[in-house]
Image 1: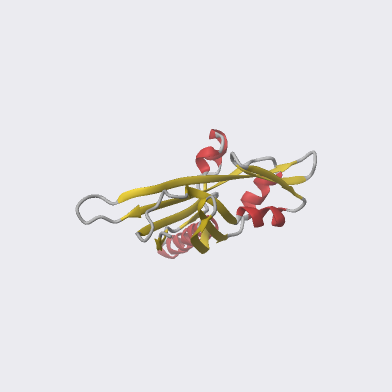
Image 2 (image 1 turned 90 degrees about the vertical axis):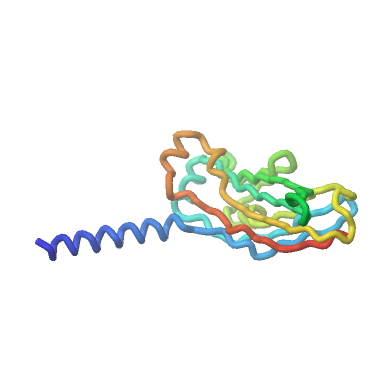
Length: 183
């Protein structure tokens, strides 16, 4: 009886670890920097991640996936809370058009581009170079703390898909923190 219980417990633990390993796919931020351009301050970042089989199948069946990047610049102050200078979000939508057999990447509010393969589309999803603040929004010479994160935005999925995809569709990076001296 106890041997049977022990075997059952071992099988359940192995199943839990297998499911957790599949769901714990993460996003790694491989490059993150802020650059001053003619039009203002730009976030130049790159991410490393793969879509698991479940997400790949979902795209093939017409589910649109949303990937959101959040960046925040704060100026530390000793006498009060940190001054939030910049707080921005950018969302990228990845979808598959069954009629044209093309993958479509839409940077919400900015641009749309079609690709023949998923790998080509993922190149655009894994990179960002967007204007986060106009020129003059940061004080030159000041040091700002930057917090950056990227995740698959499950809140933008339809409610039935959110419920059905409970733990399988979680892609998220850890917060990347660094400092930037404004130019």
